[in-house]
Image (tube, rainbow, N blue to C red):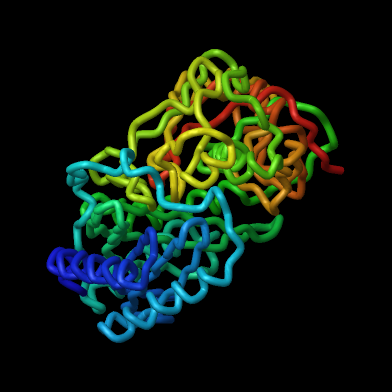
Length: 443
């Protein structure tokens, strides 16, 4: 693995040299980003090693501005000559591009000052043999959990670390090393009714924060077994629970709809909805980029703008779009510090999981979605699904080969409750969602 704390300081100097080179070419403004990454990935299947992969890569990208003319170029070669050639290429490109009055750096006053250390770097000195044993133990736990677990798609473990540096001609240069590690397992189960598959995974900045291989294997087996004997449903209309790891996709749909680049193209069903009610009054959706060890934590965005904690939805009312400087200018607004996306998005819970099922009564509990069926322009929503049929708050039987349909606008406004079973493994975290009735197409 790389000594990334030492590399961070070296790479900052490279970015400074690059910006000076752009200035020497006469650029009125310039920005550059450098990444350097290293990792180990191991996959096993049925107790045998499938792949062992060491990765190490780096990249440098520069964008220059001559007034409102923009040019970009990139390289993987960090030599002085290559950096000069890359800057020269970007400058030559800029002279032939069409003028864009909205192009340029983010405003200088928004640059991050004294960025905090968010405890994102926890390298894992993982030896190949150790990684193989951890992956094998994970898979073996799943395969030995129950005789109905008959096959495996394998277990995978990875240790990754990298550094990110960004600088621009406002005088801002910032960067930080980070790490991300993970373990996953997928197995197949079979009974008299047929075969099913499912998986589980864990991810964290620090290896000690990962779930154990035994736990990952057990959960993969349990989830697979729970799907055996799945039936089809008769076409109906019923309330629906989106399990926490599935409900995350609904927040992704929201973010796509309030993203500045979607909005200035007039391609969102939430066009001009700032300050309007889009969820029931109990809904609070917020961003906190400063969570220590957080999966999405960052002290500044991809334009050097200081990130900040903020509400996207308060009492069900849309409070903020998700903007970088370019989309903000197109909309006549200010950047929200979201170049590169949101960071640590959360939604408040209202009910414990058992209460959520009781509130559902009789309806569908969705555990997996299939296909891409959300139209952000119209809000129309239709996706394949699998899960469980719930009767009187209790699981009746697993279901498969169904399609659920509604409109995202109605789904958001029809949100009944959020469970406390929060999936905290990623950048976007939520509990399960209880939604008002949706169309369920089956037999």
